[in-house]
Length: 293
Ligand SMILES: [Zn+2]
Figure 1 (tube, rainbow, N blue to C red):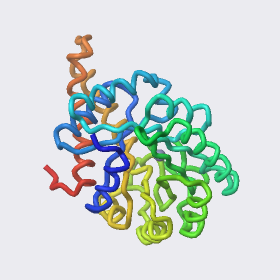
Figure 2 (figure 1 turned 30 degrees about the horizontal axis):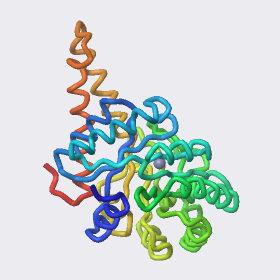
Figure 3 (figure 1 turned 30 degrees about the vertical axis):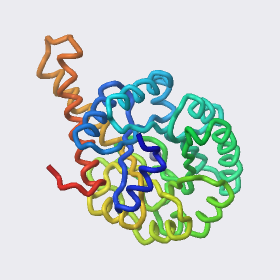
Figure 4 (figure 1 turned 120 degrees about the horizontal axis):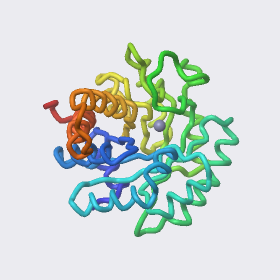
């Protein structure tokens, strides 16, 4: 199987992007694996610190390994890692990439902490297993939830978005392999409207300045046109989390309601898996520039 670095290079050349989907249980993981297998596309599975703790690090690592052995091109990312201890745990457990998130801190502190995290990653990274390291610049809120208002302090005004010259300074100082900028994206999605629009010009300016792959977080709730524009402007990885959670919950509620006497999980869950899988497939098709089914 190709390394994640090679896959990212490939999508860059094709002007497409690879989907990153967060999971917190077996059903969501199955949904992502089924989608990737069906479409024969590479995929990144992301687990935040909370998701890692819930599933278990050795458990998720071996599940992903098993899917790979079955031919699914699945990569594992340690999403939004906020402590050095957790950076080290993920790096030594065999994750393909680690995101260190100190984006809520002032610039200099973010740089200092990100350098510390990079040094941990280096310790466990080798030519045989190169761990990609992602840093974040610009605050976009933290949790994947249904919102009625913007997260407090999130950068959405043009003057608050990540600036190309600051991004370059950050990348040079920290040596990150990938960068997650604030370009009008926010974590979570809104109850009754699409997310605020993305600043495509800004994405392009940042990509031209830093010349490393850019990652779009908080993809749930953005429009298809914004996604295509963002990929054209230089985004290589797109994170989707809330949409999967919403599909999971909705399908679960409906299934339980319409099967009041069923108690076997393997009877109840296939429909839930399918509902999440449909969301993943729709996003993967869009990101890979395949026609929608
Ligand atoms: Zn994120």
